[in-house]
Amino acid sequence: MKKVFSIIIAGLMVSAQVFAVAPKDVCGQFKGDLNIMGEIVPDKDIYLLPGVEANTLTFVLPHFGFLGLDLGNIVQPNIRVAEDGTLSVDSTTMYMGEPLSMRVGISILEEYTDEENEGAKYYSTVSPEKGQVVLSIAVPDLGDIIVIFEGNKVANNNYALNNGGFEGDWTDNEPQGWHSFVSASGILANVIKGNTEQFVSSTDVRPGSKGSQSALLSSKMVLGQKANGTCTNGRVNGGSTNAADATGTPENGAGNYNYSDPESTGFNTAFNGRPDSIVFWAKYQPADGNIANEANQARVNAVITTNARYQDPETTDEHAAARIGAATLNYSAVEGLGWQRLAVPFEYDEEKAEQVPAYILTTFTTNKTPAGGTSTKNVLDSLYLDDVELVYNRELKSFRIDDNVLSFDKKTATVNDEYCDSCATYIAETEGVSAQSFIAFDNANKLFYIYVIADDYPQSGKYNLYRVLFNDSDTPEPSAVDNVNVRNTHIEKIMLNGQLLIRNGENWYDIYGRIVK
Image 1 (cartoon, rainbow, N blue to C red):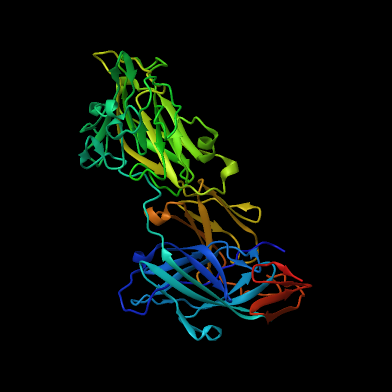
Image 2 (cartoon, rainbow, N blue to C red):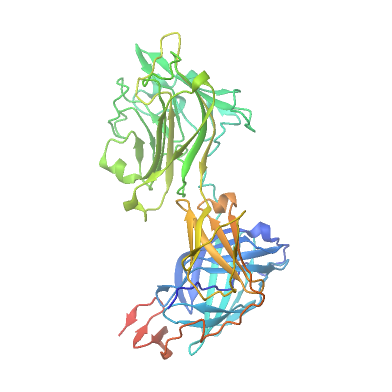
């Protein structure tokens, strides 16, 4: 049987109060519980994207599971939103894959009464803060399966760096989101807190910047040795007269390093994404002006970590275990010692693909080596920084219909064939570490829409939309005989001790797909 995509019509929710809801105001990511016939699946994500028609939404529920199997992404474009937040869309007939192997009718219920739960009422409504959707899936031989999503909108700033332009007021010589020696910890903190001139605001901004400020890091001669200029969105620890000594513990305050600690309020940066790269502008000016000198290399190191203490440089196995991915670069000055734009890709540990990002520790320094560089007493290494940002790729790398790879012209591809949503295998390949693709079938207009989003969608609202057009003149009617390989199985359902059990073929399943003897 050929693989096809299931599409389920859906929407989202809140209370019955009256408010004016515009589609653009409710777009984003929602997280909550999915209720499938009384069984709760917690922490499910859904997305509301701008609809392909004006003033509508596209609903996405990734990886819908039924009978314990992943039946594909639920994607429905052109959902209408009333001023009171009520969602509506014409009901449709869709194909659902294994283990049901049949077409099903799917619709939104504006109102649903759960008679088995003391008459509890549910509504398909949405607001900028929360949402609820009631789906009715009419499965032949099984009846109506009711699926209810209830959740809150994901609203945080945990996908970007705070104040990447170093703008605004600098308090004690530190801008919002960044720190240096002034706020250092460690047994030498009182000594190095006087290094206020090593991290200062500058009006020398990168070409084309919309801001008015940048950051200037400078080295310094301390007790006859160089002290690199540094800034971090974590915290500096000063605990050794040996610049290269990074050993120490939080308890003894020894060692020189930058760190992020969940317990260190105000000196960590909460973070939930997997970006592709960190991009920034730098104007590096080594003291001797020699761009070919390998000793003259500044450094950036951005490390995404779990919910654990981490320090740069790493000195223990615990530090390495907390690292999920990192973007690291030692770089030289450019000819003329002017501004340059640098993009540094993140490299992720494949063995930690299931670990959840919790923080990001980013460090800039005037030299890759502690006490390095070519500073003298009178001429110092300096590094200007501006417009630091994290980049998420969200491109469609390729799209195949069976073995036919389509070519897209300005995000549109045309197929010289008849339209059919279940006659072939459709595979979208994306460009981006966290990129996800969702295919919406528009039967009325004989189109495919391919949405591509990345981890930062809840914050940035950015997405890419691609279209696949078909040249046939008549939309073929779906045929369960021609287009769907219907298995000759008998499906039954029973309620046993309050639990729904379903027989498909020779086996009985619970709602999670576990075989029940």
